[in-house]
Length: 318
Image 1 (cartoon, rainbow, N blue to C red):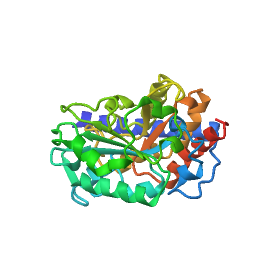
Image 2 (cartoon, helix red, strand yellow; image 1 turned 180 degrees about the vertical axis):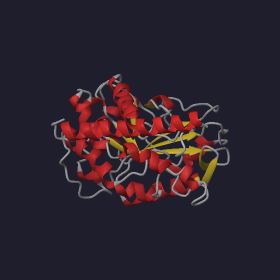
Image 3 (tube, one colour; image 1 turned 120 degrees about the vertical axis):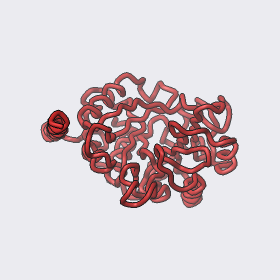
Image 4 (cartoon, rainbow, N blue to C red; image 1 turned 90 degrees about the horizontal axis):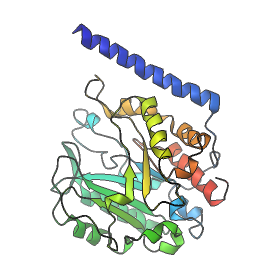
């Protein structure tokens, strides 16, 4: 028992030390980067407002959400705190400016996170279609994967094609070099990641897992994740030359050996350092590699941070 208590005390000290390190870095080096002072007026149509004819797909800094459809997962106050990563619906996230969605499904087409389930993926797609019907130039990256430990939903590729229809942007590497204006009226890059079923092929309406990459590590320590994100990002090609999307997740994860296993209090340890991360990318001369930036419990400032850098790229100042 004494060893357990001692380990937990050491763990708490490590967390506090790492948070202090990041706070000190923010105080000394600041959070400025090209576009950091950009004021976002209309979150619903920010891509349209940046001029679709000039905004290249590869140069967008895409604000994304992690485990996007978990706002109503599990049982409120009982199991929900262990799996909820967003408090807003998909539609509300899109209105706020989110443009990359991370959806996990199981065999019966219900959204899930681990063993906990929530509403049908129909609700996700209905929210997406509603948002797209209300806007003209907003592009969405929709990642749908079969959750770890679950079976693929049968004929799910056909289902996605039927539900998203003419909005789907076909799988073609030339898309990365195109502007939004050049891919319109197509609006959705849908990445389907089954576990065992055949993967989407080049030229199909869906994109395969190789076109959306990331490097996840299982840690609840904020500086550890922060530095890991920088390290993995530094190993990627610049956005101008690569033909895949790369995602950085500004999140930390509850781990089994820690008494705090609810998502929100854990992930908040890194939440405040999103702008610092972007700033450090430029300090380390890897700002040209940042592309998808995702978070738990997305808020307006996170979206604004991403859109500001996108604005700077459009204007040629980043």
